[in-house]
Length: 196
Image (cartoon, rainbow, N blue to C red; front, top):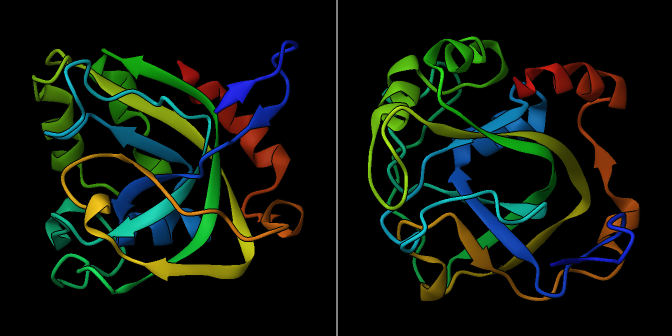
């Protein structure tokens, strides 16, 4: 992913997937969730997690998904994807902004904009490791767009593991022009105030 010299046009040479629980992908897809909260996983590398990509596809995962981790939505306890299973990508995200919050009160104030349980967010906030200090969490405002047609491809072992970002196959031709926003721009503009 690169920005042109003016910094205004995003080009994605390799489509990127952001792995997130299916229940959270569903919440983002329906507009019930507008932000992403992430600390990182064991395979994030020495630097730890960051919102390193401005534009990415939601890659639904069942890894670590437990009903107690969310306040709403249906969690189907199923084994993680296996090679050959069909992955269905239905939504793309542009991160309007991303920040690292270190004030728990500011993090707690975001509750109405996500479906994670308070304990899940607190656990992530307090966790330390992989380049991240305790008492911090990454937050991004997600501008979600629904693809006109679901994009399916077979799951491969390279998509596995406790990592946030994965390289995807070539995206369908013309997906971007046909995608439609989940939330109106005015709603997203109002949410810009969450940046802290």
